[in-house]
Amino acid sequence: MKKIERIWAIVALAALVANALPLAAAAPPPPGTVVISNVNVNRNSLSGTMANLTWSTNPTSSCDSVTYQVSGQSSRTISLPCKVHSASLTGLAVHVTTTFTITATAKKYNPGTYSSSFYPTDVSTSKAYESFQYSLPITGGPCGTIYYQETVTAQMPGDIEYDPAQAGNANHYELFDVHMAFNGLGVPICPGSSQVITARQTFMRIWVLDTTSNVNNWLPAAVDPVPNVDTGGYPGYINWAINLGGTVYGASFGVTLGYTPPSGVTIYPTWWNTPYPDGWQYESSLEIDWNGAMQTLANVAWPLHVIDSQAQYRLGDQVLVRVGFVTTLNVWDPSFGWVGSDVQWGVPGIVMGQGSDNNGGNNLDQYTDVQVGTSSGPGS
Image (cartoon, helix red, strand yellow):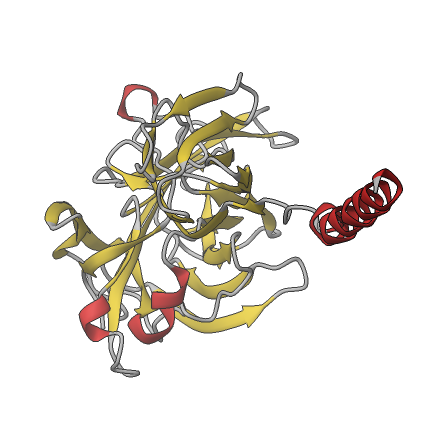
């Protein structure tokens, strides 16, 4: 009997081991990873120093944190309560890259991460302004060195606006006016002489560059500047309004457009809108032929067309606008006209909003980006 009992015990143990083997072989499934999706960055603010992040997670109960770093600065981390999937990033720098990583953890899951970068944008209600003054020495004349004086100025809205309500209309555009001013003061070749060295020609030019997308054709120049005839004294306002979170921020500045002298001046506006190999789009060129006056003055607004249907895809893009002034100098004789040899000089390229001008306390330079809003001014 004992032998039989021992045999049955061995059989029962073998059966128990056999039944247990499948359980031991089936290892528990590996934990899943928290999935982070629908990440949205609202990078726009009045100052350009903050941004809001939102995202989704699966499972939604995850406990999240955000680590972010402004280029050139130390990183910061925001730890959020569980089930909260949004954060406000502060202490940013306008148009300076910020990198961020979202980390989401949950019980029985591997942590999930999501990393990206952006640059914050600001609402500019001040104009972008550049002004330069020059004193050009002219040597080799009969009375020694003399100085021709010149001031060039350009101003425009601080941001470029497009109207989303008009995005479905391929023929609708906002007017974005670039105001350019030239003031040349001639000088007699000798004290008391009737012959003066003064401006014979002035060239004003505009280029644009969308540095974010390298797409520029949504911002072409209009065919003509204002004024586009040989007259002066045209008053007007350049206006723009930006919609930020349902609040509209408006701004404007006035211009008086025309030429001094008001008659005898010939202008040749050229509408280019031509892409260049370096990425810039050559918008327009205005040639002004003067009539020999001692002082020459031009105030021109050249409207660019912000095509709403195309600009809707450029929201937040950083855009550079470059202006150029080139002057041809010659000697004017009241009896014989232009009697000297042409000398050309000038400022071939001033990038608006770069803060490199010499207008001192009036410096209103701005970063220029594409905003939701409207803009208008002289021209069509």
